[in-house]
Image (cartoon, rainbow, N blue to C red; front, top):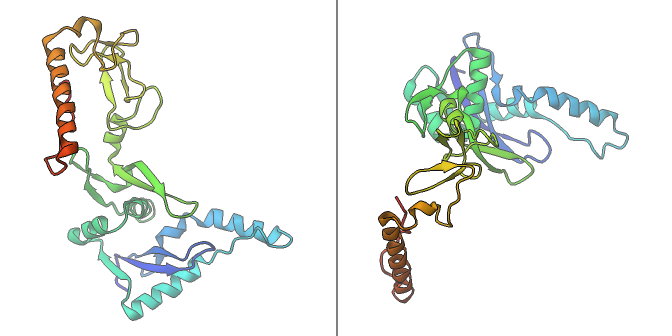
Length: 255
């Protein structure tokens, strides 16, 4: 196996409940093979294995076979060249191919393992700010299920953009988080103080109507023009019900 290369391959039945998943092996200068994905799982794997041995009938036991399965399937992938991807970590194009073609949940996890254990830093462009940052510092802003009881993290962005999107009230990330000068804090769309969409007045005690407009602006030319656009919008939608092939109609906004 080539040194300073990352090997991505399929491992089958690494533990009970998993049919197959992607596994990753890294070979440093000393030539030893490190299975990155399962290294961090060894501690809780051993604890569960101890629990299995202590259980009387084994009905609550979980069988873990990760390291042996990785060795077996890596050798098989090297022999058949099937379901095997090899990346030279000294080659920028190949590292970007790995980042682009692999699920981001695994990409960030492998980047953290490479940095923590081997001092190798992978970087890529943040989808929010467009700047290049170390992958190991990226934070997840979304998730979905994996078809079982697991959770897969998604929508990773750089740490700076993540911090800018944190709400001061609930602590959750939102791409719609905005800084309010009157409050001196940043709030998401669910926690932010009332704000008039016409004049920009804001504050927890500000009263606005269903359109987010304060009493001083309900008769303003901007708001009246918005109401006219809303009326036209509903008329166009009614027209669209009779002529469904017409162009898509976009809901109007105040601004």
